[in-house]
Amino acid sequence: MKSLADGMNRILSEGALTVLRKTKILEDKGQSILHFEIGQPDFPTPDHVKKAGIQGIEDNYTRYTVTEGIPEFVQTIQKEVEITRGYTPDLNQILSLPGGKPGIYLTMISIVNPGEEIIFPDPGFPTYGSLSRYIGAKSIPIKLKEENQFRLDPVDIAENISERTKLIILNSPQNPTGSVMTKAELEHVAEIAEEYDCFILSDEIYSKILYDVDFFSVTSVDEASERSILLDGFSKSHSMTGWRLGYLVGPESLIQKISTLIVNAFTCIPEFIQRAGIAALTGPMNHLELMMNAFRERREVLVNGLNEIPSVTCQMPEGAFYAWPNITGTGLSSEELAHYLLHEAGIACLPGTAFGPGGEGYLRFSYATSIDTISKAIPLVRQAIERL
Image 1 (cartoon, rainbow, N blue to C red):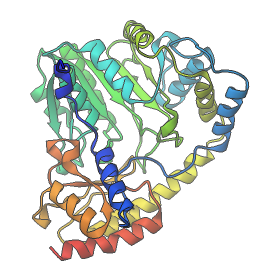
Image 2 (cartoon, rainbow, N blue to C red):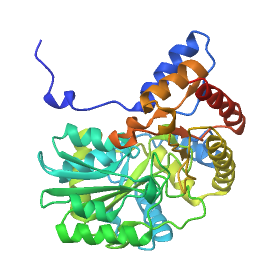
Image 3 (cartoon, rainbow, N blue to C red):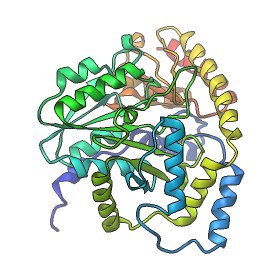
């Protein structure tokens, strides 16, 4: 049997899914597990969104449709960007996607040649590094610093960028740290990208999940018309992880090429799902307020609880729904402590190294779970660490 392509030896799985598989094995053996590993809102998709999807099926919107997205969906995204980012992209700058991850991959392979450089945050969403290695690019991870509240520092980008850099990936609000970059920092990154004539992919999937800070999109600088690309979707803000719906906004020439890739890969996004997306953005938004009120309470309980545990410190995240505690005081590595908590305390969280080498010394807890689960977990984590 012939071997597989070399790239298959460079691509990695995702830590959250790996831990989830481990928990299922333990649960099948009768062990009780409290789950903090998956970044998925524990709220149902809003009723009006579900009804729109069901109605779309009943209206027979189940056939091939245009690759870029049905006109009504594209126009809805255009209006959404105008409201939330302050500029109005041309309709030809917008492209529908089956979730956010394909947007990362399609952008990379459309821009970066083997051997060219991709800059991304470390720790960061694992897909950035995994896909960078897969396509044969040179990964340039930029370490996030606790003293900078884990915001990606433009000065560090400037010190690591080169003429070989083709793409800078930003993620604000950020997974896994919950950091939110400032307007000044993002504008500085835009200046660096212009100086070195490279692209910026701005992953803004958590843009609606913020706590007492303002959101700014780097794509507002050039209105996604020259070098910046906006990636967003419906998974987090509308509890639509399984619907697989997202979008890109970028330079028209790039969007046209990515659209051609989509024609060759999966043709189009189901129209009934796009119609659910239209309902999500044009219908009632009270679900988001309810969700944010819950996340805010959970954030306070979890972070304050973690800070009461000896050998653990945790900054208050400004966005997303993750706590990122520093566990260096325990004397264990991230992998060791995550394994210990899972098997000795029944707590499923992620080692910081699941998000890159810069995550060593940290754990990630998703508080997209109930207050009851959080309240049960804190004393179990404390007791387990005290037994070390």
